Length: 482
Image (spheres, rainbow, N blue to C red):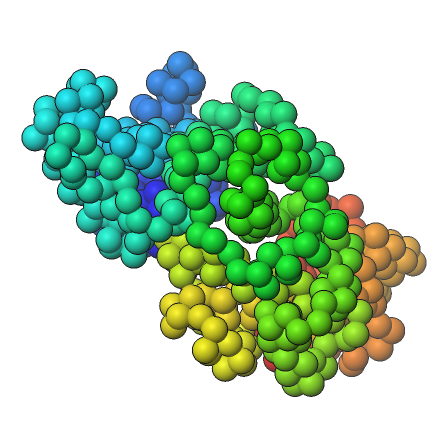
């Protein structure tokens, strides 16, 4: 599910979904929108008018942003697509931040403790309404399967429960609340070896703030085992996040676990920090450890996958990295809760489903049922994405011309400039091709597609050809049998 939807009214959710569909398609019929959003054409038109007014107010403009033309709802050609995306992000953030339950939950996760009188004054709500909001917040936490809640004591209320989950939920709410404004207007100083974009800096700074806030209140992460801490030393050799500089005040006993938890959270929510070279080097370091059962189990799964799916040797260390650390992340970050709060498990691909079963069989005694399902799915997704790139056959294209001497060479040169040979292969014989590009009629077989391309300088025809080729490539790589 989408976590943000939990804080919005049904009408607000419809507006956000409506914007998503119009922006992605540029033009869409009210009938299709009404069907997709389970509502009526009349309500769709009302929502469009409201969105137009809200966007005019946001930009202080009289511009008509959404047009009704030829029974279609269209974006104005006078407005950049970026403008619509910016407004979409703003509106989503605004709706979430207006939610009383969201504000209440965010306040408690940040402060952890408050008296009802202070709470009432802070939000300017009656005490009875504050208690209603607390009940709604607890119901939401329960529905999302978080092991934490706001409890009432004699003179105050406080958040209690799984500390690791509390921190990760706090991070998600802070990112949801601040992402739009800060991403566009703020520069955050972060001490790492990476050159971060503003959006990545925001995520890193939010994680730092969440961990700093929790530790200064004396809240400690769940203590890690010796083997878990040992596995993390391989990461510390290659990935440097400046943890010691930021958290030099943490006690000696708590430091190793806090550092591990911070690194795992960063690796999961900022995967940009993990280059292929870094992951391979960490995989090499993992091979140096002996009798560590976490690594032994990861190697056991890797051996089964290598044998069954013929994974090239150059990918072994990379996959040892993924298996080992995604296992730790699943445990420490409670991915069975966090992942499903913001995502869903898709089983549309039979290959992903089968790989997931292989993973779950190996780890069936290591994780809970819910955690095992999420772990299996994520490892399967990663493996499949690598393997589909290696195994997928290129799209074979033949070019045929009746009239132009330059036609063949011009098309061939442009296609070679756009696509690698692993993606598109130009063949000489028409009978060997899947797609035949021609400037005149030519006989093709039932399994072939004839693409008529008369003028090589016509941009619109190139766009149509590119869309068709990309569709074939994506389908081949997402529905590949391995």
